[in-house]
Image 1 (cartoon, rainbow, N blue to C red):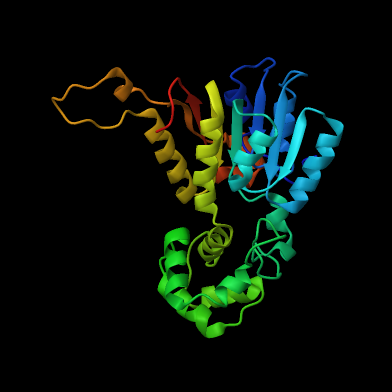
Image 2: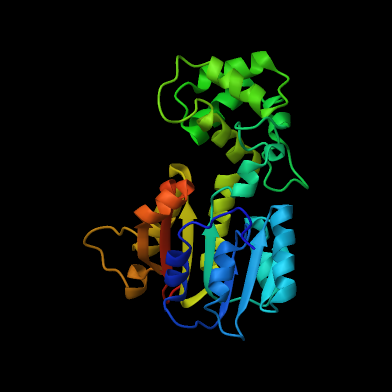
Length: 312
């Protein structure tokens, strides 16, 4: 089922999600199915009358999910992004769920296949869409956006030091059509590169985030899933770069801390209530997993539990 994709922090995620080493009962969601690594591990813990909604915006991942659903009646597979989660939960009759997970990393099949355009390790078309059935490709965006917009995206989403130089070089080199072509332009626009990361890494990350609206999607997914949790239910999120982890960390913090109140003014009990409490995080992969799976090195797991109370 997993193919060539190794799920990161699988055992830790499932344990925190179910809160037990034995069997767990209830409705659960895997909002980033991938190749089913986390889902299959979770299914091993779930009782026969539990249910699991799995969602992925990648068409190939969805096909894998359908195959698994054909063998396990507990599964409902949905093709869509985090924006589709609310409707999917209603359609499945899962207005209140026991737990949910989000793995925000790009899967190995996406990275390793040159035709998906996520990586510069092999030459392929500049696509980068998680869902290849719709949306604007990386090539279309790079060839139409103005220099200022490209520079902003590289700076904000890639934290690229040489964003303005690179944006200027991209506009001058247009039209761009391949991953290797983009990587060469990016590296050529920088001073001599030193360091362990390839000079185009930050640019590729930034363009991918832009094309897939990833940060807005993360915010939508967090709110939808946390709102659907039953009391005591948990949301587990694995992030792989600082921008996503910052969103998760701040959102969990806001849900687990009372709003600041003016000093010396009377307040009611309800004004001090919070809807959640952070139960884990940051959790990172152990040495053995990092050695076995290099992509685990940048993974961070955070878990929040729903308390009594509603989101404002």
